[in-house]
Length: 152
Image 1 (tube, rainbow, N blue to C red):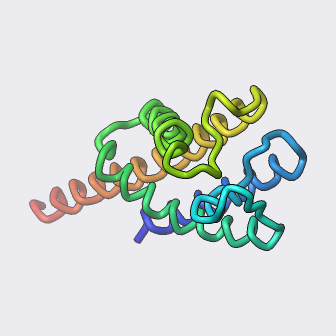
Image 2: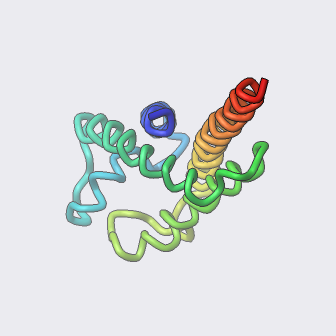
């Protein structure tokens, strides 16, 4: 349950940050990217499309949190989360971009868009990774304590 909440909150929060960055022209890639992946190349998401994409990104954040739990749960500290954020960014903007014409590849993005989106993905990965890992290790500690109490 905690992984679901972490993923949902992380997806919503960082998608909202991405929308703010897009609104203030720090990046040319907004959360509407999620909807535009399934639309034609000429599709330009409206404000409603951006908000729908924010909520879709919240749902996708749940999947990203469970993926982190499966792949990196044993790691402590921030390094695995940062690495996970970079991996997600590379997968979306390098490997998925050829499949969907609406997504610009890394080479066709401006420097500011690259830096902004990379930072957002890194901080998302850090948030999800650190939160999921912390929850997992705290549960392990509480289980060990309960086993010790049973022995006494």
